[in-house]
View 1 (spheres, rainbow, N blue to C red):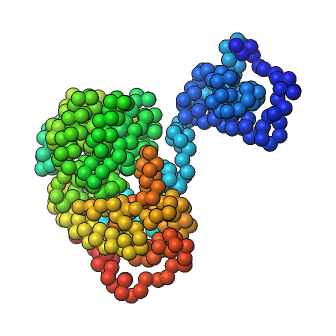
View 2 (view 1 turned 45 degrees about the vertical axis):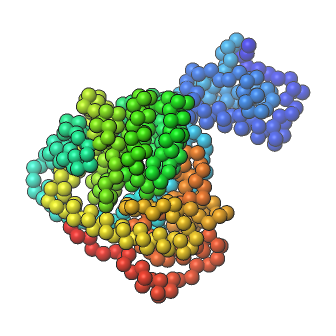
View 3 (view 1 turned 180 degrees about the horizontal axis):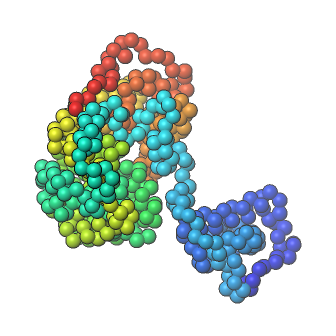
Length: 501
């Protein structure tokens, strides 16, 4: 038993003296601080015994004693005579970067997001996840904004209702019916984004330590969001037709997860689509294990041919369907939605009031105006055509420099690519940043970190034809040369054009 502050005899601490000993002490102290920051050690929690922590850290007991003494002197921990050491500091602010392994910032989801959201002037962003501004229906948005400005003043200044604008919820229910999803307007709740929708469902269903299944690879912000909820994440390898169902079944048996989060159509980052056979198998497994599935369908309107929807097969029994207009219409006018079992809506609405109060009233009115006047339909027809041309062109140009697409996506903006042998995606991304190019290395998307040789490319963000020459130069270590006139002419159809409104 520990009986208050410990004072070792000088000779007992000889092996911690010098730079090596100081390094070991600092490492123990940093480990304790990190656990407190990650909230695995909370105020009042007892620290591991000196003997146990010495074994864990592979250091001497006297090293742990000295580290604990220094932390106590700083007020981070305190000693209780006869009981041990306990966390004394106030609960540290939640630091997502401290939860889970300390990843290299070049392959950290939050770091990648910051690079894409805060680019400098002239930065190329083939790794970002949205369309360029020149592809968006700017004139249609301005026209709708002018109309709203002349309308009801409450739209401009009031809170929206927590459940959301009824006419838009009615329209969304009709749109979902086109994908076979039968939902009434009272099963639809508007949110500020797809991310907020998933966050609310996680708040509704999860407690810290719950297991959540995700695809491997998957949209990297799923990792960051689940880290914020202190969930345990288990990745399921993803195939061209959906998750590996054998591995899925094994994970259900071993981990008893609470949730599975996926894209059923136009999977991010791979561009794959879920096959009906895999969809039925997943739902059967989910039903047997009591698993809830969040189906993130924010790329629905990028499809040429609709893929199977889990919510359609399931009838919204175990599947929560998520949508958004941030990627297709405007990331500035944030509007998403949750479609869930009817008896969940009241609880989700209460959570929404608690976390954001009212609904996105102004954005909802704007989206409704564009959906009902035909602008959105014409805009998306143009976007799908442009993406199809860009997908063919960019895939060909990537192959020409040795970067191979994993599959040929049926639609959408993403192509998941394997780099030439021996090239690490994270290292390539570091080099690219020095040249003002933001890439999305594969391990950002992989929980198991098994995608070190992959990159995700957004074909809509690859219109600058010098990009391919610059990436090729970074891979080979040579100085880039301007593309010849023939290459530029061959790709001229990718240059920005006015988007029909």
